[in-house]
Length: 116
Length: 112
Image 1 (spheres, chains in turn cyan, purple):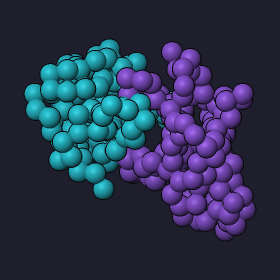
Image 2 (cartoon, one colour):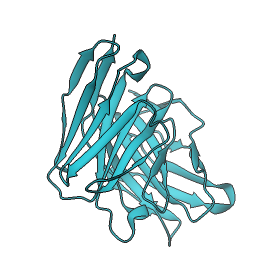
Image 3 (cartoon, one colour):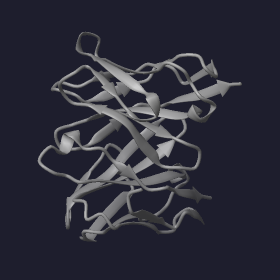
Image 4 (cartoon, chains in turn brown, orange):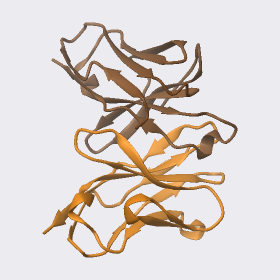
């Protein structure tokens, strides 16, 4: 299994509070991703990173920010959590070589976030 | 923008029966296509992928998929389903920038 650790695994928070989720990898992969999974919506990309300090938005980035100061860590922050952000959040990584489109994703085990 | 459609939300098959899960994609360039499987409480795991060459690709756990450009499809098949195959299955297409777009998933139930 790829070395991907997400923390926390579960979190309950209140509306309006800031929340930070952490993804840590030991594979030295270049690309890192944050997805959210909701029933009936599959996985939707929030943000991704193609290198240290290099990030870009995905299809559902509103209300989220990310940071990557080291290769191994990719942080997802909800500045002011809302109930619509209750979801399961998955971190994924890929090697990001010359054929990046052909590379598979390795997934973490997910973080269940509940915003009350 | 690319998109993926999995028409079947839920499929039930008997153990030992054959399986086909449908996937249709929309993408303007050469598609890079993937099938992933997710067991309850887990992240996704790659079953197989296609980017060029032989249109019939083999994956892990006895799964295969056939790419049909004329139909924009990449259907997943297995000749004989085992109870342990019960899971959720996701089809995905990658862009040249390495971003993956997923379908909404198909939940497979296996009857004894």
